[in-house]
Image (cartoon, rainbow, N blue to C red):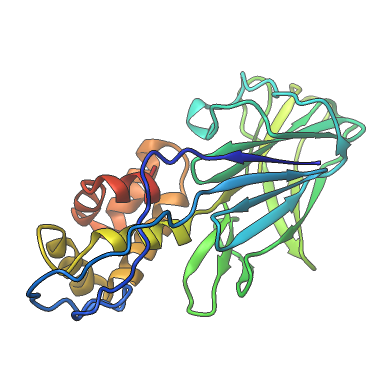
Length: 289
């Protein structure tokens, strides 16, 4: 049985049609315009978390990635998060899927920008490794980054999504060593603990998604006329193109956890341009929420 959980994004996204002038989709060479070309207003897409047995699929309507959880499907359960810093909790919902192994339970939650999967390890006898078979977005390759995160890179060299740097905490709030490895389409998270660790231990593979929606939103808002055109000019000047600039900022923002860390990362690569971007409500909501 398949259940769809739809993320409510709050605004309708605009598909791009008929923007001739000198604005192309994020190749962006903005010239002065006479009259704005009409837009074909339509729902671009809506993000969904699709649950199928022991797998979750995150989709934005045009692209998707999937993650299979270890263990067997079980009754939905939220782990004890008392030892986990609040800034690391990306969801505010009930789990969409829970699976169980002998000494651990794994629950996946929808988030505004993908999914958060929490491993709850119950004792020192539990496994230290947890395997998540995954399917990267079509046309992309997966790579392990120096910070421990996983990136999905398309054939244009753009970051289109990924899995954030892992973390793990014991019941007393002590941070534990944890890491990802990749092999033949399987993401493995390894968590270090022993008989002296306070259980349960909670660890997190957190997917980052939504680049397709962000691209469409920026394209529909940064027109070659009006106040937003100034933001486009600045992105081109600083990064070479709007699409490249927004991708760099989007990747930096979503590489961190917690509102302050996310904002600081975006400001580090974009300076005051980040504030100008999120000053456009649709872009803030669909790229940096």
